Image (cartoon, rainbow, N blue to C red; front, side):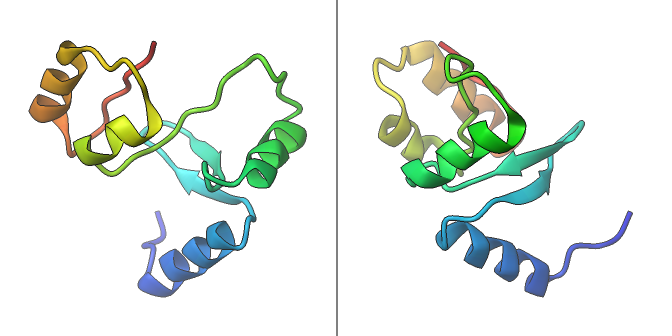
Length: 94
């Protein structure tokens, strides 16, 4: 596997800031990423993947501090799981 260098990360971040899409590796597959705060970018994800609008997208966050920013009615158990497993792969769903 090719090593990702800072220039690649900076380029991807720039594309996301500009409302574009980038492919990113996850634990098991490559995903298509967009800025979750850009409605236009999110629409692009649905269009490119031909994903139905009722099928929600995943939002990747950097830690517990961002949990309340992107989710509401977060149960205490989710905070306990975040404390135990972040940083690292942990999926929380409603």
